[in-house]
Length: 125
Image (cartoon, one colour):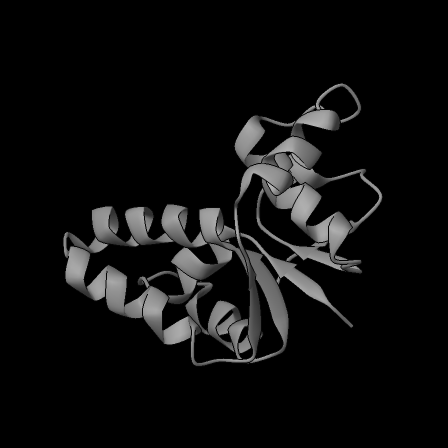
């Protein structure tokens, strides 16, 4: 089963919060994310921990795991923008959701309720 992992899950996996262990567990499974999610998570971790090197190391650690990282390129952006009328999402979330659609994900793992009531079921860790 392919899961898309949103930036808020990655962020919570590497910062102190009540969801940390659940988020770390989900990152140990097979999943897909994209380069925009990784950039968002790096920025958020850096802001929370006030340590951009730690944040970068956290993101780089995912490269060694069992995940596929989709590139944000002009094709993904174009595919996302084609869906702008259909989905009531901001452009960043639309890129994430389009990544999940194009990769036939069965679950969208996120704490963001903006992904509720779409074709791919949103789940929390």
